[in-house]
Structure formats: C-alpha cells, structure tokens
Image (cartoon, rainbow, N blue to C red; front, side, top):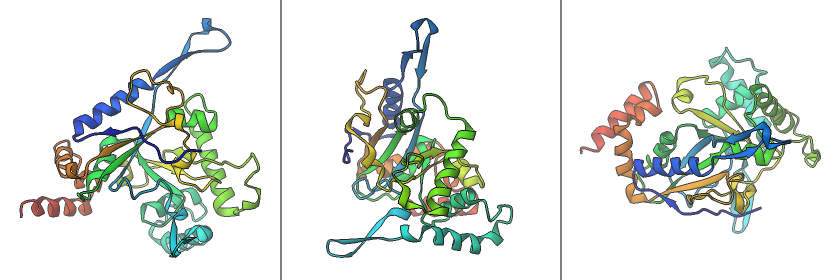
Length: 301
C-alpha cells in the first residue's frame, strides 16, 4: 500500500476549484463493452464525487477519531479511544437517549451517526456531496496554513475495494453498515479479522438526515471496517487521480487532493459567501445566525 501522495492540484478561487472538479469528472468518465460481446453495448462509468475539507493539509490524517493515537512519551504512542469503542458509544446512548426518544436504544447505526454529529469519537468520517461545503470547511479557520479538499470517486472506490460494478442498492448498503457495526462495535471479535467474511475496508454510505444540519451539509459517511489505518494507507499509486487529459488510470482513479494556499482562504470565504455558502447555510438555526453576525461585524472592526 502507498504513502500519502498527491498530484499538485492547487487553486486560489472558487471558480478554479469548480473547474478542477469538472475536469476530474470528465477525465475519469469512461465506457467499457458489456460482456460477453460488444453487440450488447457499452456501460458508462461516471464519477460520483464526495468531498472533505481540512484547514491544515500537512497536519491532518484521514482517519476516524476513535482510531487516533496520542504520544504518551518520546517515541511511544497509544490508541486514545479504540479499546473503549463499545463503552464510549454505550455511555453516550445511556446519557443521550432521553433527548432523542424517537430513536430506539437498540438502533446502533443511528446512534453512531448521532454520536459522530455531536463530537463523540467514532469509526465514522464525515464527507459531503457538496463541493462548496467542503471548500468552506477547508478555509473557514482563516489560518495562514495550506488547506486541502480530499476528493473520493465513489464509483471507482466501490469497484476497486468491493467489486461493485453498478450503483449499490440501499438494501445492500444497509447490510454492509449493519455487519460492520455488529462485527466491530458490538461483538468486537477481533480474533477473526482474517476471515474473508469480515469487511476490511471503509464503507461509504448516505445516512438518514435526522436533523437539518446533516441535510444542509449533504452529509455522507465513511464507516471503517476491520482495517484501522488511515485512508491513504489503502491507496496505491494508480488510485490517485490527476488533472491530465485521458489519464491511464481511468478505471482506478479514486482519490485526489486540491490544495488551497493559506493566504487565499479569506478571499475564498468571501467568494463562497456570495454563493450563499456561509455560517447561516452550514449551521441552520440560531447557532448559524449567531456565527454569521459575529463574523460579519468582526470583519468590519
């Protein structure tokens, strides 16, 4: 498996960002003959892209909070939460269930999503279907450090890692989600991880939008399976997308990073505001209004 590698895709405006995305979509659309004979026609594969923004490209790893490590002494690291994953989720459910009586305490997948939403460490990583939302999160801290947006081609990802050659049905996706949670979170039977029945790689899925913020942010989740490494650990060199015309890895282009210079963040945030992507959009309700007003007048003072 490969290390962190990225063809340089750098932008300094919203328009350049959207141009790069459109170029990637075009470059990684391809057609193949349907077996067993060309007379059956062709199947066209079009990228379905999802996005995740990071305010500090160099300092962030694509791994869920539950699997992050902390340094306990020089050269020595310890898993901060993963050994307590089931306890953490169970404690959250016992404390939070009175606030969300509509969710059964036995509905572990929904509680996992709620826990993720409220900052509890889980094996979920948030993505979005809206590229502008990801760009907002990459630039909103306004710190003068290089940011990035990670892009995943869901079509190619499912084909390479799960052998899915078509759009995955909702029923099948629910099966994957339920099996990972049962195997990894509830039963925690780690001794059999080499069993081919275990789901090794992270699974992508769209959750039920239980509240408006998930809807406005067009949330998508990546749910980690038996393998606990960061996402880029699974990425071989041929999985990285490039902006060149007719790339050689049309069928296996999965991941890309778009880089944003730190000194361009404020300008891009202003451009996004003109597009209606701001605190009021990202955080619907009074919380977002408060953030928007504070930022509006802070910029003037």
